[in-house]
Length: 217
Image (tube, rainbow, N blue to C red):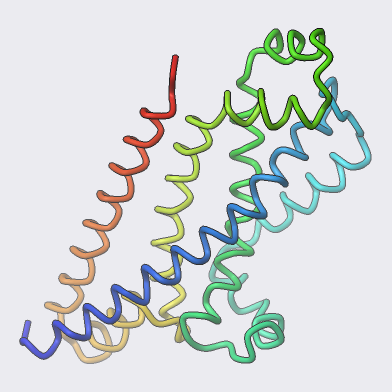
């Protein structure tokens, strides 16, 4: 690999980090409350409401069922409406967020379901309101599992951001396509793969460490 490619790889890496970080932040802000709502409105929970749960569940399942590549193309009009363009790293974040929110919400719902019912019942017996149970019982108890699940989502976003590069999303995927594949540069392809592997290893290590730190059991 020639020395002039190092700046390109550095730039592509920064674009990928930008896409993943911002997409994950926004997805988490939306996805965690949605997951809490899915859990608390399900049967026998503190805010049980079958119609709400069924409608939210159907929407989440519908979006999750769409392959990411198809989703990127299908929502191009929406992407243009939101950011004014369908090309570039900022534009790529729209489908990344849309794909991640349902995944996060289901992961959060699963984490909350693992909390023993006795803990919630004890909080109710002490007179805690549903909001107090959510903030002081459910979320703190599930936080180690939620962090572990969010780590998985971040890693998925890294892979999806690379796919976004195939349609002009920028980042490492765009670099691999334009310089590695189209210009027949296997060294660029290998370098891109190595950088992605290192990113995933760092993310997984950080996520595992944080989850372990939060687990007080």
